[in-house]
Image 1 (cartoon, rainbow, N blue to C red):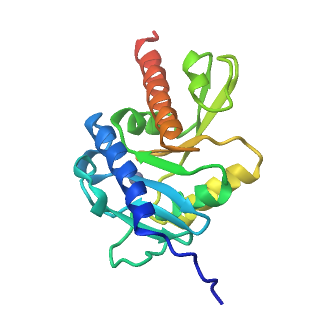
Image 2 (cartoon, helix red, strand yellow):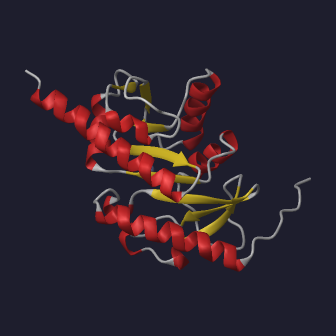
Image 3 (cartoon, rainbow, N blue to C red):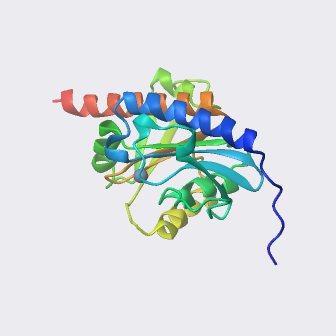
Length: 214
Ligand SMILES: [Zn+2]
């Protein structure tokens, strides 16, 4: 028997939808969400999240482009279809109770880096001052590994790979999907934005190093 979910107030959903739409418009302005790609979500309570409706232009998002889902990724009180990758968002909320926002973008830098590092299965970051933008990192000397998982249209396969990484006890702050983009999360929108911007910058630096190294 499924448990009864606590109702979500229209005000709370609207508040989250506004925060997601604002962030999405800004990330779209950076060129990180081409051709209606990318998806964004925010945890509302233990049982619900707000997430972007599938296929909307992320540069023009408004409150009505965000919908309510339960933690199984099912629409709540809406006939709209949530993002195709909803399962990856709810997985983060299940695995990381402290995470309240998930941002997923498809920038050119993220896409190229994901292809370049796919064979290694990770991007190994070390020695960059900006690693300190990731919560829990206090020095550039620490090692930050961002896994690169093979792309698939079958979300349970991707979820299984993410679970396997976490279950192996390896720290996870973000992951790339080969030829696709990045997922990252944080306690709130500001922290998650900081993670995403730092990772975009760090991946760009790694690409530049390879371009410039003899
Ligand atoms: Zn995607």
